[in-house]
Length: 245
Image (cartoon, rainbow, N blue to C red; front, side):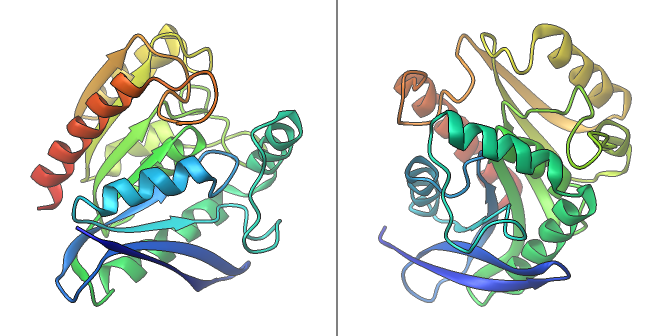
């Protein structure tokens, strides 16, 4: 399957948000997925993950999550300066802005001419947490979160105070979680706290843990684990096929 890549500027109350689109060529309709990046925005590894998912029959939208702070097209480097800036903006952005971005993107995808109307969310690191919060939107049917940060600490957004764990009780979406046991950002105690809350809220979810580091999907740098990346992609495609069609 061949794909095309483009972008669209969506309107939010905090300005325009650039969203990168990866779509199978042709006029056929496909399920749609919001894919959320790490703190570095739409880097090469993120584009390749998005393209791989699209090539399996999905309309994929990748928002620039820091659109109200950085010019459109900004990509932060995988270095200390990029990490510092990404983490600074992660806690500068208001939680309401993250949620508005999710609503606007989900509505856009639901009504896109190439969309079946079924919408999922998927994300890594910061994006894993954003994918979870997108699952609180009424148009999102399935959520895949890879090593999602700040969930167990409730510290996403301005003021480092979010209600993600509390809101699991209101979601109707199905959830898919992948974690690395060697990830210092989400230790065992944090993973247990999240799993306990999911069970308490009676969320429809599945849970996978591997002996891997944080960011093991990123095909750049020392933490990349190609074997786990392949296994995870197979599991993800099966999940989305079951939940989105």
